[in-house]
Image 1 (cartoon, rainbow, N blue to C red):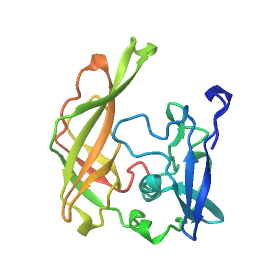
Image 2: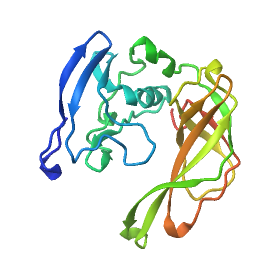
Image 3: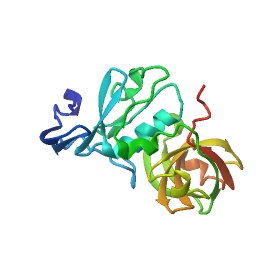
Image 4: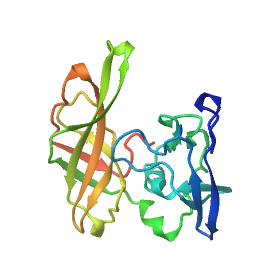
Length: 232
């Protein structure tokens, strides 16, 4: 992985430690201008030393293990474009580093190692998520000149669902909002499982507002699914 001159000409490189049929293990040397995180607190890394070997049609992909739940969630969502955030200076970029420039084989699903099979959800899981905590600020960025120099606040809200490992829910599994209720000035579209029990789980959602808009108004509950409602 490399950064261009605008990022100081630094490269991320590493020694291959081991290779088998399912993984390539790399000991990375990471450039100081290429943090391997999303830029938000308490979020999964974007790259780690365990690269999972995934076959999709004729393509062979290497997906960081820390991004496999998001990768499989993008496949399970049924959405037309698959977007996987990748590390670059400042955290991540949307293009050209994302996978959305590459068309996955139509109608096919990737072949993943057995450990990850449960994250490819062919029969969607649909549940009601009850908001049990008030939204809290977890970060900020900006300001944005086109919004009166108002910085952007990152909010986190956690919801409880009555589904757990016995109902095929897994750690870090991705959920998409089917039908939001209540009112909020911020847009939340998907979340991830942050705590898991046998018959229950907690899902964290994140959204954004501009500072001058004040805190988001509470949402009572959400209908969520592993299938993206925007999928055709």
